[in-house]
Length: 160
Image (cartoon, rainbow, N blue to C red):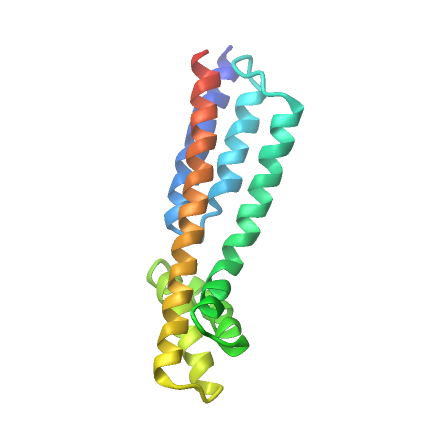
């Protein structure tokens, strides 16, 4: 019983870290929230099926991977070229070292720089940067949605 309570408290900490990780990209939000579900499963409070745990694991992997590519997708969707998409990814990687502002500004600046280096017009470069920013926001929203759903299932299993 004491171990169960400890695992539930630890799971709540992982859920909080997961939600925080949706906003601070250096923290892997969905994987932390998934770990919370696993911790709850190890107690007597939860009865998640294997199918549920496998589906949530796949969702976690997919959302985490997609989140890194959405800024590049957004850059391309708003008229950017391959140079803008590559710049967006490189900007995100460089931005990781300047969190949290660098995570937001990095993809935008990288996409703009990539387009300008490729000789594209300034307006096209700025549109590409804006698209990269929109991709970043989509990724953040996607991660937040997944973490909120995981939190719902955690609380539901804990209460019932």
